[in-house]
Amino acid sequence: MRRFQVASDEEIKNGETTDVYFTRTKEILEKEGLSDLRVTAEVTTGSLPRSWEWGILAGVEEAAHLIEGVPLDVHSFPEGTLFHSSDLEGVREPVMVLEGRYLDFCLYETPLLGFLCQASGITTMAARVRRAAGKKTLLSFGIRRAHPALAPMIDRSCYIGGFDEVSSIVGARLLGKDPAGTMPHSLIIAMGDQVKAWKSFNKHMPKKVPRIALVDTYYDEKTESIMAAEALGKDLYGVRLDTPSSRRGNFAEIIREVRWELDSRGYNHVKIFVSGGLNDESVADLSLAGADGFGVGTSVSNAPSIDFALDIVEADGKPVAKRGKLGGRKMVWRCDDCLIEEVTGGAATGPKCPKCGGKMVELLAPLLSKGRLSKALPSADHIRENVVGQLGRLGAS
Image (tube, rainbow, N blue to C red):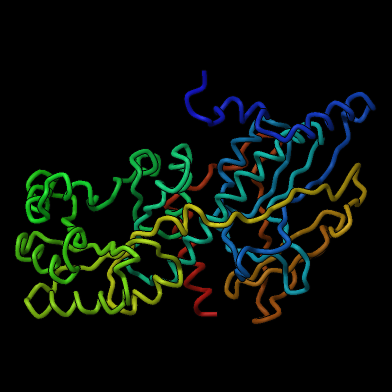
């Protein structure tokens, strides 16, 4: 009996998580003598959730491992690429292109899109929060709002989207990082006294763990912040405000009040972290109020998926497409300075940027050649650096 409702690596790789109509399509094409039909298929989206102007492509690494070993040629935007649903002329941007026998990959359409859609949604939301927070600290707190099997994917997506640290043990390990977090209310409640809990945390935790006291369990945040500062003194790194919505009122004013009271008592070194129902909009507001860091959870782990679709656009070398899609192989060009894309036919040469007049470069890079990785996949740190760099150029454009 299966204990957890998750597919194994083998079930995913064997195409057992596909929609059944693809197995029926495979059977019919085989019986009709179309096993060798070669196609070009592209992954696009017609729009982005919540009227987002841009997205961040993620899930490419898992997609590559899914179809690795299948005799296909695959080109893709590099993982972490900032993209738009369509170029300035309204042409949808293919973020990934697959070429080969259709029967070799038709069973992979469902899991391939699943990898790209959900990870891209989380990474995009994380990048939006990163942009709102500026250079302030971001902690990924979202794994408790999703199936535990997804914890590594959620934490990785948040990290490459610009977050500084992640909370899950397995997610951090796969990133080569130490997991980060503060303390739960349950510690304070179990000990029956917040000061005793803070002091015990300080006593027993390794020195490398920042002493961040949770300050809203029993009393007013201002009162508990002062209590924590007096109890731990120079050892106190920060306080975390996780104020429930029923007591929150004006959260920005609470932060300003706590900051004032700490500073007036000489505890200028104590940082203020906030958590609880945060998103890109509230992070921007609370950052201005003086918060030094944010624990962001549900808005990233439950971010809307990006609705990618996979469509055949060439069959036997001839342009084909269903209604609403453009047939034929395409190329996507981008000005890396202006972050503007242009989609052209496959035989076109690189255009000039319509904004700055500079040279545009090809964005679809080789990912797999005849089923083998074209080059080593980038590290999460490299992807994160690229995402943050693009966000910086986005802000300047």
